[in-house]
Length: 79
Image (tube, rainbow, N blue to C red; front, side):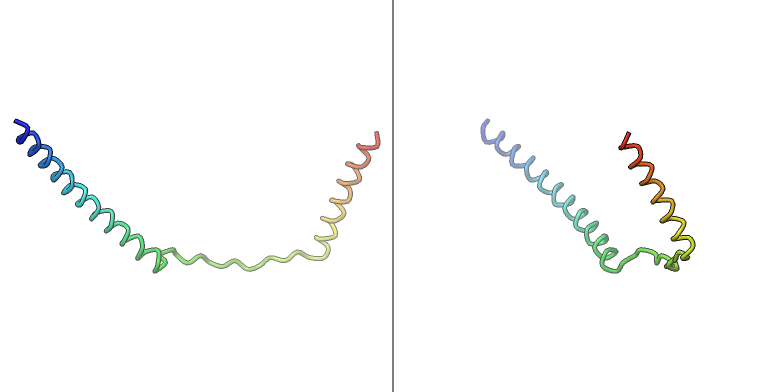
């Protein structure tokens, strides 16, 4: 009786090993595919945007608005 039990355990373990080997082959194939895509760079090329600049007048408006904000903050702290 113990010999047949051992034989069935060994048989089940061999089946499990075969199943795991198949799974590992699939995982390896997936990693290979992803690796090729990663190395070759399959990302679509993004259009480069022109760098935007701000005019001197616009910059002065921003500076004036920020100074006004800080003046209100400082005025609020004195009270």
